[in-house]
Length: 400
Image (cartoon, rainbow, N blue to C red; front, side, top):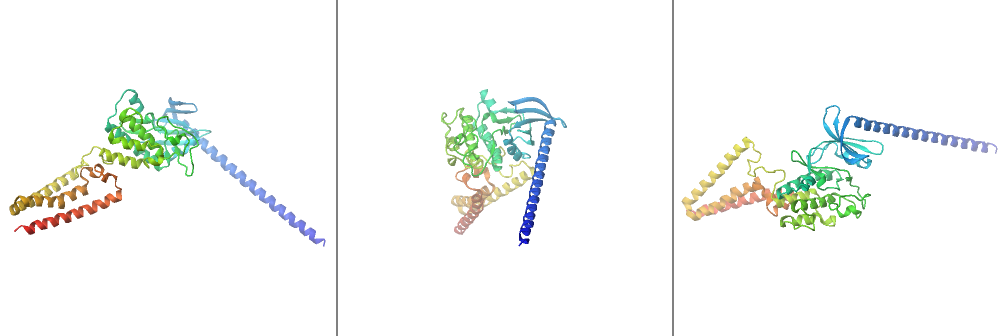
């Protein structure tokens, strides 16, 4: 009977010792985590200080302390850059763009976080903003407006693909560099999209260019920037904001859809809007002002030579068939053979080579999806060749 209490005491002692060991291990683990956190904090602070002292400040470009943009010089190579101090909440946005190369985005060289703020080093780009041009009475042509907006949308596609919404697109944040490249500036209130949120935590944006959802009604996404692009396009074309301007018929529907109150009624993304503008402007993506005649688009001499030989052979073949039809069938034979040649040779060639960028200039082709267009380019020429050969066979069968 006396052994039972002693056994219970020993069991309780063992349990107490185990609890002490567990607490000791937990305390050691906590101290290790605190040590790792402190080491990480020290390393982060060292990176921040190193970045600050790697560039010599020259002059303040914009902003007020603690969030200023400073023109600086790289101590190692003497290159000119900008040093921007931003809230820690903006650090993830700039980190997503570090190393990204796109003509419409100012390159981010480095990002580091310090106490209460982050520092961002970017290339310095000289030029003037759209707001600068507007203040001095500059009148944008339709061609300039379209090319500016297309360049802007190309850069926005890169941002949106990385889950970044700019949220403050307006003439003062769009730069035309000295080499005439459109660039997006100031990601100061840009944010990363967070799935499942009903609205943004902050209500920000420039009045007149900010979409309705930026006033706290919903979470912003890529369609928020589409709204701002629509306002900007209207301002460049007419000098007035939507609702105050008489829009050109050609662009009225585009701007109306961009600036719709409901995000669901706007273009789904920068890519869709870009395709619509290309269609209405009769332009080809990525082709610019180059010639639209196949074989002469790139300017390479060997391609030009092949094109000259190919066109010469096609013309000679057509003339020979027409001459043969004229000799055997007279005027009727010439017309019938001409139709057969157009169907069998010329139309298939025009479709396959995309002569004159017809897929971007003619509706409804310019609105077709890529897969549908590929299928059409394969099926249509085959049917045309078959029809042309069938007609040519009928002509020759009727000629004695």
